[in-house]
Image (cartoon, rainbow, N blue to C red; front, top):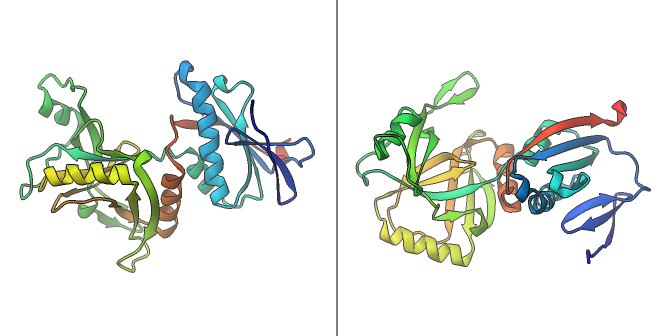
Length: 279
């Protein structure tokens, strides 16, 4: 039996269903309505839709946004309705809603330090470094990497060379091991924020054992299947990590919020958007 409980928030009555929220008929019309679609196989859509609802609602609730999130029709359809009230920056909100939030710490395949980390000019070259035919074994992945240490300034934008690296699979640590995350600024520059995160005890113990056995080898911080930073292991590390990448204050805070809420089980895309004026 589904447990129901009534919540009153800013004059809007909500019924919470298995981590999602659904408005009662007495509620006023939303200012904006989004319909999302899960990019997931049919056999996974039912459970994934409910999990996705719960994660998105958590993100919006953390921002103080009045929202209503629930599967459209049968959850196996893979569509999710999001009703929003009083939103001022919809572009930022859509980015937070749709971000996968997939964090991994993974071993980068390279000669150890002091040799520089091994990077490749393109995906094909990286794959052929593992197997001349380019067929990767199950324990290897090729991922894009933007080297922020070599980033250059072009007007107000920061650009970086697009490289590729080979990483080990599965990851040493992933987002399920995350305990907390927050935005920090150690340089005082407005565009140089980092995200500092800590791990739960089981993940910290696993990470400590791995780093002890891999001194001077390279570790990559991977976000949404893109390597954000790479560093070599100088000594044992237990429960702390950092994502660098010259983030702005808002983008770092948004990413920390996304990571704390958990990774979406599958990617999502916005397939419909309407406002109260369009109804």
